[in-house]
Length: 256
Image (cartoon, rainbow, N blue to C red; front, top):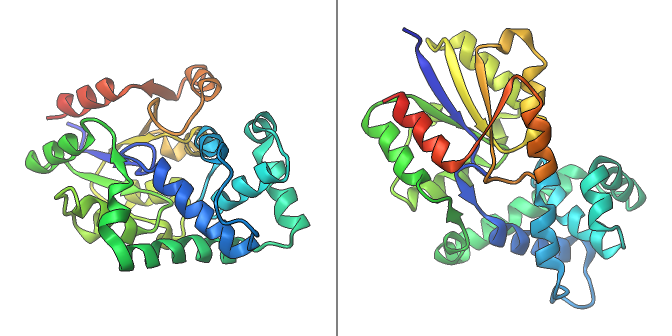
């Protein structure tokens, strides 16, 4: 019998943090660009929510806002974010590490000064906390692999009563791509199969490139930060299955 490990992304799979992301991104934006008006334009939040699927790591969030305020259209950003992001970063002589520090610094201060307010802006997707409790109760092994700082993930899950071991969380501080973390989990643990649930299509593509990761089953969470065109592309890839929240629950139940 195969020994199976569930590997779950956090943002866009377990947690919907769009409200907090925008507010954090705007505060970081104000810190970096010092706008004369610190109230965001009325339609900027809604635009950011639609554009969230392009963001690979947190430092890009204020750059999304900058690109919109510079006049880039949503369509241009959705279709060619890498070019738009690189252009803005280079033209304005930005540094990804400094942007990351600005974003993380905003969160650290916010948590330190008003953690209840910060926690209240996050929404866990329907049923996912129950599924984590289900995994825990049945001792089905699971880990979280995320580009978010681990301390933020722990704070959010602790607020839901979820406690887990140190080796169950691989956050941004690990400084490894997700495919490499999955490779190490296959090679250095007793698990012969990994079920990897992620909402980022490019991340799944990066895993699918490696033959030695064929034991990783790839699932795209259709409730997360992806677009209809991304889901259609995933449907065309034999290595990737697109699943709904209901199918995610069924997947866990089947391994009970």
